[in-house]
Amino acid sequence: MTGMLASVNSLAEALLVEAAAVDIIDLKQPARGALGALDIAVVAEIVRHLQPASCVSATIGDLPMQPELILPAVQAMAATGVNYVKIGFFPGGDWLACIDGLQVLAAQGVALVAVLFADTHPDMAIIDALYKAGFRGVMLDTADKQLGSLTQLMALDELQTFVDRVASLGLLSGLAGSLRAEDVARLLPLGADYLGFRGALCLQHSRTAQLDVMQISILREHWQALAY
Image (tube, rainbow, N blue to C red; front, side, top):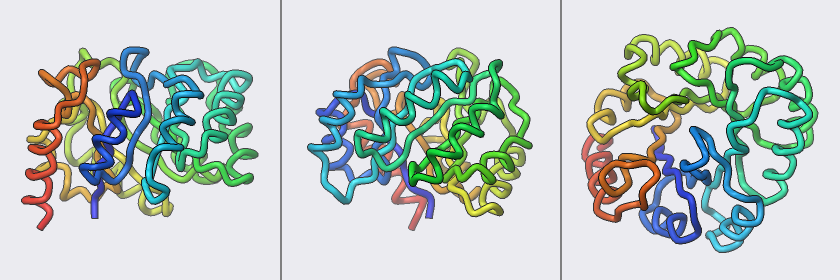
């Protein structure tokens, strides 16, 4: 069954979505970019205050694809105790060198999730390299939030192909990128492991605003009505 990921930027927001029983609590700072990172100390504090059973992911920030930057950031974030560390694969840099370095961390038990950006037209062949390096999952997101949502940038059959390819390798698949409640009905049948939300859960649907209890409740009720 497809789970719900909610991105949060503070302990208060994390506790809010934990109470709403979301499946993955995703720690990031939207004001710092598509995958803006929270400070390491803040992430560690949030992890300490959440229930042990809660599943937590965290981003490392909008970093250039340079191993000397990516690897230390992943190590530091993994040390906070999060369940998954998300790495954005932005255009440029040396993707394969980064993957080679991250393979060592994956072998040490760090659960890595690669984030590919639909609006940058990534080469999906990279999924095979991520699998061989020991990544746990791959997700599709959007880098430039001004260009539209994931469902506006990619057709449903393209998204289905992505989900099926990731699943065929035994990896977790995720779909995110300015998704709204109305996207849930179209995306649930694709069978992704999770759908990610931020803006749809915030006041005035602004991803840099505070989470809104009412919006969280509306999305959860809509989700449950479709799932059962």
